[in-house]
Image 1 (cartoon, rainbow, N blue to C red):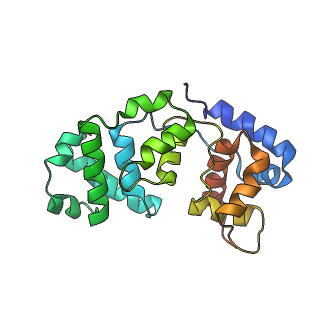
Image 2 (image 1 turned 30 degrees about the horizontal axis):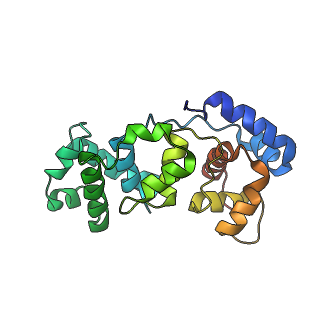
Length: 210
C-alpha cells in the first residue's frame, strides 16, 4: 500500500471536509493547511520514537530521543540497544517501564515476532492487532504508525489528548471531549479522518488558548 497522507491528499481531503463542516472551514481560514507529516516506512527507529514519546510533551520527547540517537551513534539496531545496561538507558531519560517496553520491542524484532517492514501490507486493524501485542504499545501507538509511517487516510486517534483538546477549542465545546464524543464528532469526516486528525494537531498547536 502506498502512503496516502501526502500534502496533496491533506489539502484535497480538508477542502472536501470544509464543505461539510463550517467549523473546519473557518479553522482552515484561520490557520491554513497542515504540512505533510511522513516519518518513513515502519522501522525500529519509528517504534522506538513512539516509546520515547508516550505521555510526554513534543519538546521533552524530542530531547530524550536526541539523547538516545546520540548514544546509538545514529545506528538504530535492536541488538545495539540490548547490549546497553538499564543504567545507561535511564541516564538518557527513559523511565523503567519504557526500558521494559524497549527491550520487549528489541526482542520481538530480533526473534522475528515483529518485522516492521511487513506492516505495510496489513489492514489497519491487523496493524493495530500486531502492534498492541507488544508490551507497552496500546492502540494510540498503533495509530501513530498507521498515520505517520503508513499514511492510512481514515485513522482517528480518539484517545489522543491533543486531538481532544483541539476539538474542545475548534468546536467550542463546554469541556474537553472523551473518546466516545470525539468519535461521534469525527464520524461525518469519514473517509478522511486521518487528514482531519493532522489538521486538528496543527490547529491546536497554532491557536492560542482561551
